[in-house]
Image: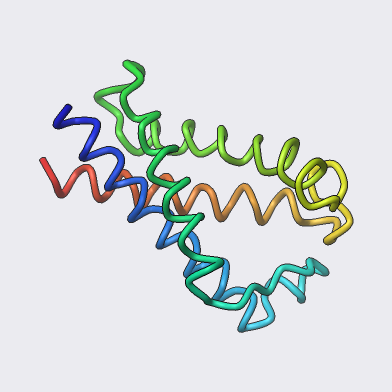
Length: 130
């Protein structure tokens, strides 16, 4: 139970980091410079579900793989929310097409990067908690 709580909390912290990076990239026009229309407003309604889902994704750290290589594990685990975002959320929930390509051609690359930020921030949180 203790590990699950740590991993959930770490996932929440990772999601907060991810969300702040997504928001900052939108504010600075970095996403737009890649031709990607992702520029969310930083609001509780946008942030809260992302943090909760990040915590749930953090439970993937319970999987018994690459246990001695935390940052590699984090990078691999970040592929799971990336695939869900690209092939479930964008096409089925937001109607932005497969891989969110209606938002821009480089959307998959940015989503991969943003979720990698989640994984690494989560891993750092786990490392600090030990």
